[in-house]
Image (cartoon, rainbow, N blue to C red; front, side):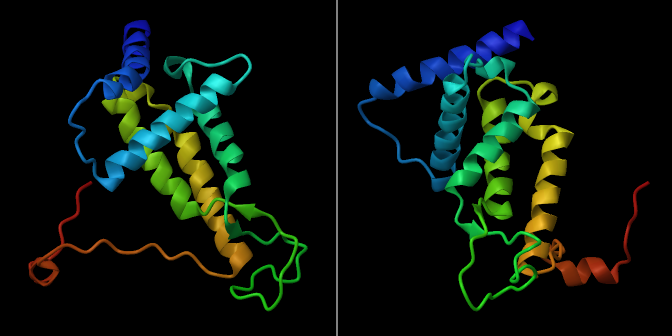
Length: 175
């Protein structure tokens, strides 16, 4: 773990100095830019903890704390159970319920951070963003927000090109 951890820190610490010396910056895709920004934000969050936590020593508890921290910047109204608008998708008046990060935003964030961790030298088996506790947390946020807003969450079925052809040939099940 120490070699992986030091490699991870070296890459993160060195990445900021590398970008200052480039003369012809490459235009990055929106996803890559967001991933880099999210990775730097998480690193800064860990750095601001007292005592600070090196990226190589971060774990799923740090990730969960980071997600809770981000709630203060959320824009999604999540009604609490005592609110008269709890379960109503379009409340007719304002209320004092808190604003939170939307589930979809958190899910996308975790996906980008999970990829960034491994791209920066972290091992898949030690990736704190891929921990089961994170998946459980995201599921609970999704269900809680859906109930609070009165909008049932329905998982979208994945469709592939040529779906009609595959359905006529019968379905294959792997066990």
